[in-house]
Length: 156
Image 1: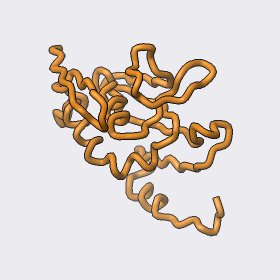
Image 2: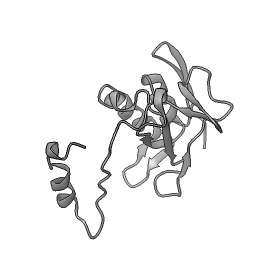
Image 3: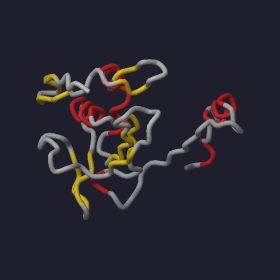
């Protein structure tokens, strides 16, 4: 595959975007460039949910039809400007701005899984997440109904 790399300036940082024509969603022909544009467009809504939280990245280097892998630590070749938190076994990525977000997505990371704790207090989660995944035995409409439940009385 040809590396149609380009450099862009994002949040005051020089970001190398590569393999932009790579198809990540083959059924729909969606390319890496389109995924990057999507994440850039939703950044104002997404960033408040990611800021300050280490991430586990689920990468799909050959597209969503092939086996993904999880990346929990940054490689030694990661640009210095990419936000991170130091852990016992390396550095975990932390998305603080659009440049960080586009950098992790450029690593073929389509799914971003934030920790339930923040970098300042890793041992004390401050977030609870209900992960509702539809499947063959649980259709999307039922999942949507569960997601619409209001739980203020639960005090969770």
